[in-house]
Image 1: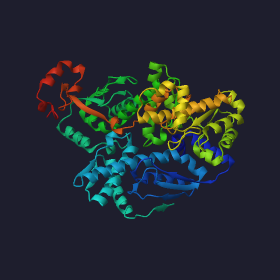
Image 2: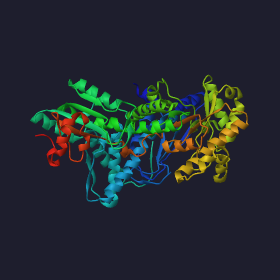
Image 3: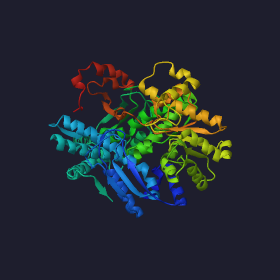
Image 4: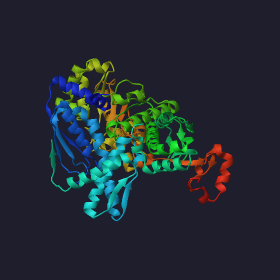
Length: 192
Length: 390
């Protein structure tokens, strides 16, 4: 299936209908705030990559303001992302965008707590069997890397040193390097 | 299957290499969950069948609890027998496909059975960690719903929000009309309804009424703008009041008064804090639903249906049933497992070459079909039952 068709199939129909209505009555710029209802550790990489790839595919520019950099604490209800852009181009991204943000942030929080409580223990992520599919497994491995990096930084923890499956081992190593680099910058980041 | 080895726990791949070196043998797996569920094994079975075909081997798959039936905690759902060499590297992905839908099916059943006159719409796509999970959850809703239809005469789940999963409900397309994004764009609830009607003139319409905090007055305003549609039974209103505030016209005292009038039995007995929130608290409470129904009826719009959303999981549905809340349709993604750890499925090998052997502590898995061996195995010292037959 074509990437755009696949996205539409995964998207709540009422967003597709809204896109049609906005197309009929005229587009306008919109600003979204994206948040969680509980405290988490920010793990937005999958969500940001999705927005950036979709913007490029649609020839659009989205202003993505990351209020909390990857690997930092976020309070309950505090927006993690602000996304500005054409409502017509953004409105049908919400379903998939939300899929890519929430689970990773909560798992990162858990991974941090475990690593910080046992700083001398090396952790190995063995969650693949408990995930509902490969996409979730990738998110969870990334989340473990993010939470682990925070525990390394804040508590001198050994943290997560790897995982059980090859598919996420590669990404986890890369993510860890990315997270360590990213979290060294404390100010809010704007990506466009 | 693409990338199966990459998705599989490495220790299973190493076991496969060792079995390949020392010689294959038949193995029997028992696959179970630790909590009561409703059996929803289709994805797992399709995976096993496709892998057997791809590898040119035969797996004997015994489904102890057919799709849509009850399974007790720890009771194996599947027994799978085949060459260990070809089964050992399937466990990671097999378990992914079994546990989550079984728990979600249980939740979906409970919700539909508690509210048998309500039509449910699955709106969980946004809560899923990817498309594969969304497909599993839609399938689960359909399985739980069918059981509630059979056992409780429930309407159950009639569809879902996205096209990709509509097939599980016998639909070609996803359902749903307008999100908050459209109301904000339009600038008023009535204007949003007008815009919707202009672009989709031949469809029934459900108008979202909580954006401005004027649930009851906006519902009546929309009804007065489209009286013919309302009279034809083609107009619904959806209430999705956030948990941070009360529905228009309500506060704690008024909420109690509404239930005292319409469903006094619901607030007579002891209720937990969570139950009280569903009955008389902020957000879409039973009191809010009753107030909305009464307001529409008194304005002469008894034919307008009420669609409710916002956290309608098993506990909230139970309270809506306790208060006889006059809901026609519920849109919900809250049948997804709340405690993800409850979805963990486990597979243990219970026989090698037809001889029962299982790790210590899991003797309860020894299958009834192995009856002649069961007592013998159970009487052996635990240590001798552990590990591979070498």
